[in-house]
Length: 380
Image (cartoon, rainbow, N blue to C red; front, side, top):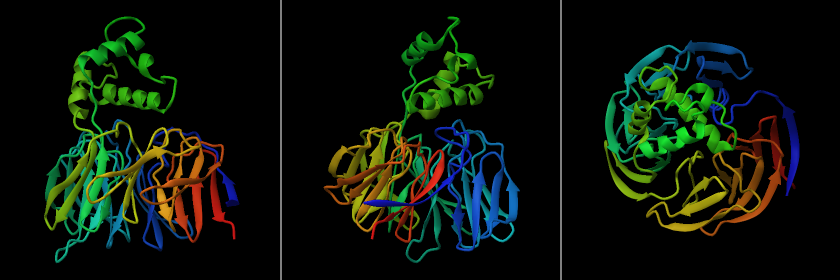
């Protein structure tokens, strides 16, 4: 069903869940803009020549930064939600000069913002951050409204359909009993606390790497920041991350919003953003579990496993011409027939780790793995 067109190798050391290439570039059709958490915002022309650069940071985000920049008129918009000093800022596309910068009350988050054009009003920047939706004016960044109800951990980016926005996230339970269990597992010297040598580099699968990253953030950003995890820091982290888990659909009305529906099951640790395609809302989860929702009501049309691709998932699903494409962390690229009763058409194994969302263009699909960039095309 698929014919390989090109493969370009590019070896690099890869942090499984948030390496320097995790944040998606954006283009205005002429130039490219990319944000690197360890440097800042950079622009290149179509030939790859540097146009300008704006150093930013350092940032206080336990899992690293994740929100991608977006183009809004003559500005590049960047949301930097972090444990301390969160903000949203606009930069001039021509030279990178900052146009405005507004503080945000949300703590750390990773979702990319969206542009929304309410009827009869100026366009707004929509954000899905810790515990709430938000809206900022493009011209000066002023916050227009907030709408509560989101989860504390907003990793996936929201999607927008006309005047309805969809986003999911998850909260966490970090009660005292769980800390006791972690001590029993990891506290080698039995001193009632966890030091970096005890909790770093926990061997295992993706969830273990997430746990390690959480511990590093807890030790670095809670309390005195000495890296040691105590009961007090564990409790502080619980207050920081505790809250509801679920998918929230909100109807927008100019400078206001109201809940449309909520679905609260099975979103713990889910990274891929939802896909809204041809009247169906899709979410892919670890284990290759794909759920199709009615976007108007939240009714579940179908939940099932993507046969042949049952691993972990970080890449978001994409769709075109009646087909959905999902790629697992193990490099299984699955092609699905879209619809309420979706079905698996084919699974292609590239045999390499894959964490980036595929890109679709001109009848081809581009897949970036740990080792290469692949381009596939439909056989004619």
